[in-house]
Structure formats: C-alpha cells, structure tokens
Amino acid sequence: MKGVPNYLVALALTALACSLASAFDPSPLQDFCVSTNSSLDGVFVNGKFCKDPKLVTPNDFFFPGLNIPGSTENQLGLAVTGVGVDQLFGLNTLGISLARVDIAPYGVNPPHTHPRATEIFLVVEGTLLAGFVSSSPDNRLFAKILNPGDLFIFPFGLIHFQINVGKTNAVAFASFSSQNPGAITIANNVFGSNPPINPDVLVKAFQLDKNVVMSLQKKFST
Image 1: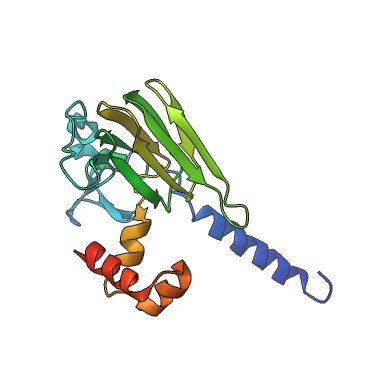
Image 2: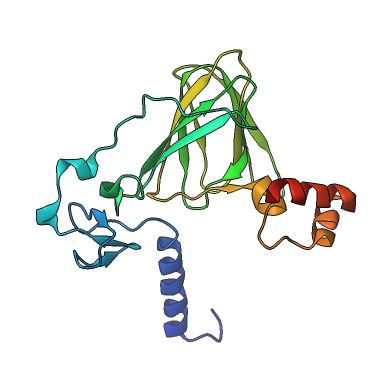
C-alpha cells in the first residue's frame, strides 16, 4: 500500500487473520477438555473449566435418550432437544454439537439463525420443507422437500427454517460445527427483546402499522 509502512500492513493482516480465526471454535491442543462447574478442578478453556483428566470417566462422553420424542404440544408444534457443551461436558473444545428436532404435522421451526455454526440437517421420519435465504442483496431462497434419509445444509449464520408438510410427525437430527452454536429466532428476538425495541424502529423497518407492531411485541414478550 502506497504511503503505509510495511510493518503496519503486516500488523493489519495479522489482526485480520486473528479475527477470522476467532470466528470459529478453536482447535483443541489436548485429547479432551471435559468441562466442569468447579473452578478447583482445572484451568479455564473456551469459556469452561476443564476437569482433571485423571477424573474423567466414560460418562463424560455419554448422552442417553435421543430416541425419546420431545413434546410438540405448543404453539409451534416443535421440540428441539439440544446436546451441546452444557448437556454433554465432553464436547468442550471439540467444536461440534447435535440436536434432535421433532415437528408435529403442520408444525414449524420458525426462521432462525445460528451465529456460530454451519448446520447439517438429516431427516429420519416424516416430510419437511426446509430452506435458507442468502445474504443481501440477492436474498435468494434455497428450499427443498426432505424425506427420510435426505440431508440439507444450512450455511454458517444464514436464516433458515423447517415446516412439516406431511400428515405424520417428523423427526430430524441436526449437527453443528460448534459446541455452542447459539440460536437467534428472528420473530422472538425482534419483537420479544427485553427491553422492547422502540416501535417506531420496527414500523419503519417492517412497513407495518404501529398497532400491529405493538401487538406483536406484546405477544412475543410473553
């Protein structure tokens, strides 16, 4: 770059590389780092204290019960049974997690995003319409009907959804490229924030009547 010292260019490139690297789960430098709630058992790694390796048991890598359906008796007809680092301590620093997704007939997993992970979505029962939307300015919808054995990928951070278009319960398993992928459900976060977003912002952003916005905020805040 003209007029910019080489060492500053190198420093900027190093900072960029570090910022890109920090956007993903760090690679482990040991076989495992089973998390623990006790600060007396080990060092603090990736947001969790690590258990003394001598105290680690097979149960630290074991999670039962994913054969059991979650309850879909709710407004969405949806149950998500997540298995992240808070449920399975042995996942700490390994950069992966899993979820079982149960969707009742005509139920929906509403538009949402995982800010820290790509998702691989595998259907094992039922028929789902699944899709994601690319980023601006294209905003392209990529959607497919999925049947048992079908797999679909939701790229890192993009808004996606699933809806049960069949007449029977649907079951799928989602795997993530992070031990803690996070979830931002668009409607909940926008209309159910605490404290509420100024309605005038949402009126302008969504081109809605203010009474509609306030009604949505009341609905999602509860």
